[in-house]
Image (cartoon, one colour):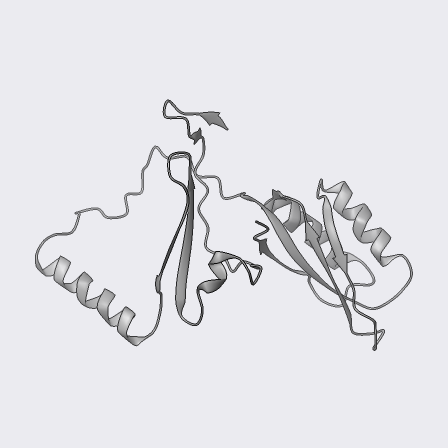
Length: 177
């Protein structure tokens, strides 16, 4: 990304909504139940976090009534969601990832996972496998270094084709700091 005239990284906008694995000591972990949390990183402000209700009958009712009032007072833009924009969107965001791999136990699985990760440019941060009590129903977890979503999706698609795979891997972005 290039720097803008104001010093921020300038480039395509990446916007997504997804569950994220968050460490219990991270500030975002304070959002519980139906609460939402947003963290914004910027050059001028640094990191700031915002918390508030995100679902439930009262927050939803409040939003619906506010929308009705805005429409009734003719205080809505005529085209709130324009189809044309000059903003370039790139949703192939970079993140560390959590990948849970369901497998049937056998020799060489960790080696194969590592080889496939390497072939997709995904650097493995850690691998966790608890003691296996049922060789037909085992799981392991791989966490990655920062990489692109498309790389992890391609890795998961390859893992699903392996003979040891008993179900598609589950992956989600992982907050590491």
